[in-house]
Figure 1 (tube, rainbow, N blue to C red):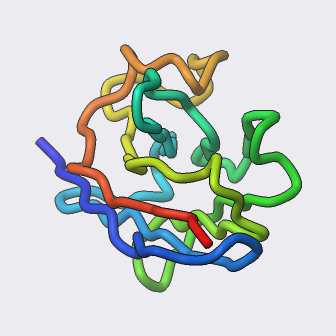
Figure 2: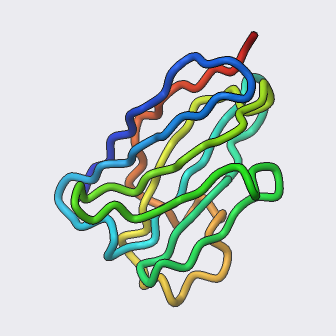
Figure 3: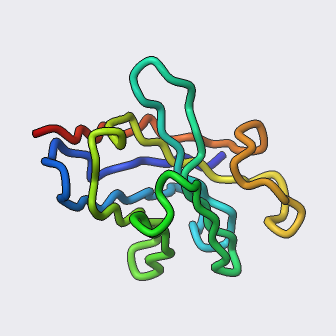
Length: 128
């Protein structure tokens, strides 16, 4: 059973950037679908970005144009570059992988029930 670990969370000011990394243990990140999710205070967890093993990406409308998900094969990570951060981006950020199904069989990459394992999360706070 693989595991995941997020890193890169921090406290920043509006307009700044952060880069989160999702590092797997026991498998190669680029061989599976990997998604980034977040849970803001008082809200349900939501999917914000996901990448297929063939490099195809999807983004939530709330982050489209500001966030970018990518395979970093030299590090065996899936990174989330977050630019022009706003206070509404404040949340615990989680990555997860789909290990039990082929990426090509998954239409909705923000469907949480198909994901496992999940990382413990990394906190991002955007405040002036």
